[in-house]
Image 1: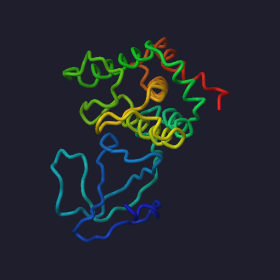
Image 2: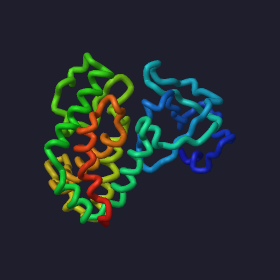
Image 3: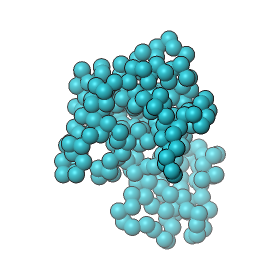
Image 4: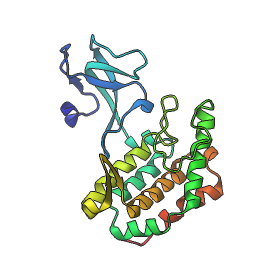
Length: 229
């Protein structure tokens, strides 16, 4: 919403007019949809609710005016270790072709397997009745489990968006493979993406989800970028 471009703690923002466009206020961090990255995250209090509200289980309310309490680090959307995940997103946003090639070269099946195991461990903890428990999750970016979509919240899909933008900047159409209406990363970018995704899980996932050996496997390709520009 344009009004939030000038937002600051203590301000009241809105029209107070009971008509759209509404201010959409998420009830919890788990329901927030990250439309772009980087972005800003505000804790607010609803001053005036709209008369037209979504279903009770929607996870958000509509407001016509809100009071800005404080600004939060958007990295908290990725869990307790969100700052570490955000640092990987920053690298992805500036990735060079040389770095891409390094990540692709060191992508491993062992990393894919460890990544899948983290997903399954998380599903067993968060939703043991899920139909996706025990699946091969090496290409998984989101699984609905209660209000959460991954062990790192929106991080996998945000990384995909960030790297897609960067791939377009440095490699253009060659970064993707077109299949009808679908578009995928080309092999080199796909492997680089997987290596970055593995690093996010290594640095961001809760300790109960990743063994020490798995963490080392997941982070290996990313750590090899040290000194490479």
